[in-house]
Length: 214
Image (cartoon, rainbow, N blue to C red):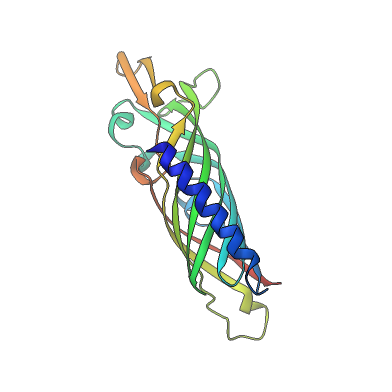
């Protein structure tokens, strides 16, 4: 399954780049900032977009994301764990169905640091740290609420998104880590976390920023 996803990604990327060069030059760029990251995860995210007539490209980078509370479910919640993500980064290549809707293939890399809930997040207190690689899809909107204005407001952009980022691999052996928990006082198994809501591959977000015509 993992190899199939990688093969499909390479094929889609090759097709996308070939299509790009065959298009008319009708390009835009945008800088966006995610709202969920500061409001829900105590972190920050910046995203750069590049649009042609039919294609979309992006690079995004999130930093210092805190997964706790409702973001922690299942075994991790029972083990009283939280996760700190120093970074979550990657790019996307997609097709624009309309001027306001596009679908992207997105490879992403994420760094997880696992701690006990309520403890100071230091190297000495860290339980385990690992990386995950996800390969999925993102459906993005592109809305300009002031596009009819003839001033700087014209470039304001709002981009809602729904993304499916399943884990493809992790740096953990067999995607899990066995440790003795000082909270439950028994041997526990921590499985590589998903980056989405409540330890799932699904993410929903709204980004705001500014578009520049090229």
